[in-house]
Image 1 (cartoon, helix red, strand yellow):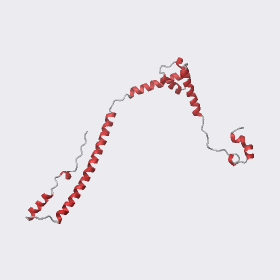
Image 2 (cartoon, one colour; image 1 turned 90 degrees about the vertical axis):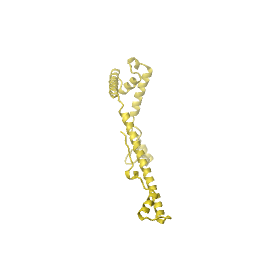
Image 3 (cartoon, rainbow, N blue to C red; image 1 turned 60 degrees about the vertical axis):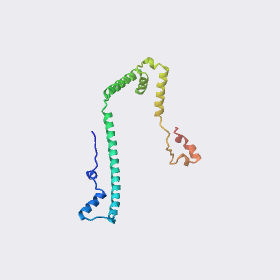
Length: 186
């Protein structure tokens, strides 16, 4: 699909030159022009302005054409990349088989799915013997530690109030009396 843009027809029409305009005037009036008049000078300045305007229009037109050609190239490139055959069926099938294998391995060996997935990604043909390997055992313990670490809540920025006062608002005697309540003791 090729997109061809052409300029408007009025731009393509032959513009009469200054000499042709003068000859047309001479033929109509049957006069001979010996020296240029102010009208000719005015025509010259308006022609230069017209040509400047036409140049600006042509530059804008050229920029528009380049922009449309760039869009066309991007669309063609997308069409080429999207027309490549995808192996989604085989990828999806392999993913489903791996998921099933992870489920079975986790159930048989008392592991979580995350632990089984990590072990099977490192050792696709893992067995119980593989789980006895100190390296694998250390990895499983690290996953357990990471899970426990992520389960611990972060530090809270809220302050506890006892009797309507925060710790900084209490006197020394009030702090001593309410210390257990403030730190969460019994």
